[in-house]
Image 1 (tube, each protein chain N blue to C red):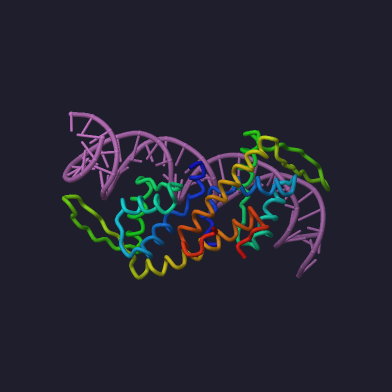
Image 2: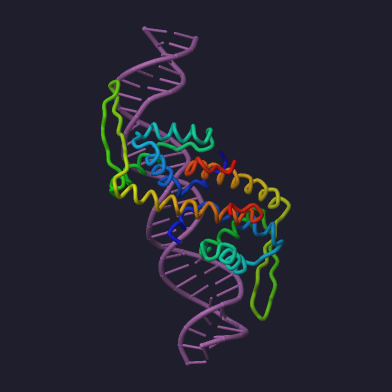
Length: 112
Length: 112
DNA sequence: AAGATATACCTAAATTACTTAGGTATAAAA
DNA sequence: TTTTATACCTAAGTAATTTAGGTATATCTT
């Protein structure tokens, strides 16, 4: 992907949306899910993901549940009540952003 | 706008697209045009715009034409041949990005 | 049996695109 | 005459990332 930098600023929203859809996920699972959903177009790096998850948790948007599976640790994350609210807001902002950008780069085929 | 940070990484593409559509524009005009096109949703700051224009020029994507209008300077920018090519590429990347994000945050209403 | 790949977590320095906060100068409007 | 609009600019600070490591277990390949 040569357009990786366009995704700057959208990582939190992507994480929150995935957790809203899938209820609970662990970090590695999120990287794989995004790769699958985007057919390889977007690869979330772990250097970006883990700090982002820690920040969302520190901000009270996510709760953690640590589980040992096949002798390996997994940290499951899920949305808190605040996190669910924030997800709604961030998804609205994202939709607005996508609509505006679509309009800017291709006025003839606006989403509206 | 609370979603300003989503626009990170898209400034170059926006500038190039505007120049592809309007043939030649000067910096201040670009800020006003973007504000108008996005109904105030996106305000390009001059602190971001001017360095971006200088970089695009340094990279050979833009040519300058300085004009004195009503005793004030205007620096008109237009696409070079390389710039025109790059614009096509960047717009394709942007479309791909928008499609992918739309699919990610709202799989039910994908653009395809 | 060894080495590579996949799973699963992590951090820290460097990069980069931006925001913030200034600066200069002319013209028009309040 | 002071504010707003036009028109350019720079530099320090910020924040989200990339890059480049690290640890450890399980599985697949040769």
